[in-house]
Amino acid sequence: MTENVLLFASSKGGVGKSTVALGLARALAAEGRRVLLADFDFCSPCLDLLCGVEDHVLYTVSDLAQEKCSVENALLRPCEQELYLLPAVQEDLLSANGEGRMSSEQNTLLGSAVQKAAEQMQADFVLIDTGAGVSTGLEAAAAIAHSAVIVAGHTPASIRAAGRSGQRLQTCGVTDVRLVINPFDVQGACAKKSVRHSMLEIMDGTGIPLLGVVPYDYALTLEQEGHGAAGEAAPALHNIARRLLGQTVPLFSGLPKIRKRKRTLFR
Ligand SMILES: Nc1ncnc2c1ncn2[C@@H]1O[C@H](COP(=O)(O)OP(=O)(O)O)[C@@H](O)[C@H]1O
Ligand SMILES: [Mg+2]
Image (cartoon, rainbow, N blue to C red; front, side, top):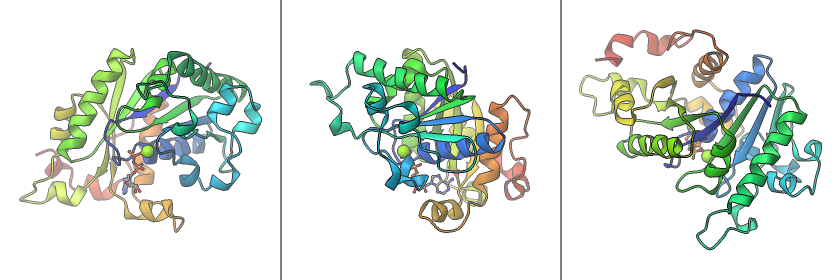
């Protein structure tokens, strides 16, 4: 199976894990790669909604793990490119043990289901979105992931959560952990009397090496609600995808609004 298995995490909710995971999956697919996107947020799955295929979900990763369906039946293809979604099962349908966590057998089965799907579709990349908090999907994802992307924004809570998530992943054996700052408020961070955490403060606070920065993008929120197309976030996500492909891409390539404020940003 591919060595490119990445999970997306932060113990804080609403920081953009799903948005960044889907954006990167699309960007990698646009680069001609075969991408498997697995939804391991068993508490609040949303990738089917964000992909606009919620009415087509018949089977989930749990069905695949229990051999109730084939890989072809379980995967959804939301666009023309080689991007395939493996939807999540709702947590209450999983027979979680008394501590509200899945047993190691369940974790292994779910991980094996993703590996089986990735092998069968010959995926170049497997991206696994996980939920916030002490997420039941995180351990299952960590067991098969080689790398992790942690998402954090300006808020102290998200910075702390990112740092802790990074440490937790290290204990799960995922040592290649990188940071995506999202959503980044360019104007706010550059304002003379800014009270927002700067990019350097976010990097310092999390202690995680930077993979990329995605600006706040109102157009992206509209796109997720079914109207219009993404704006500034799209080139930022594309930059990150190209870095994952081993290319050297300047931090703000294709992002003129941030580029012209570069000096102020690193004050
Ligand atoms: N770069 C961004 N610009 C604007 N809104 C964003 C950005 N990233 C995420 N959001 C918004 O933040 C909210 C939470 O994002 P989501 O990806 O669901 O977070 P998580 O998966 O961490 O819970 C969504 O409404 C999404 O549209
Ligand atoms: Mg999410």
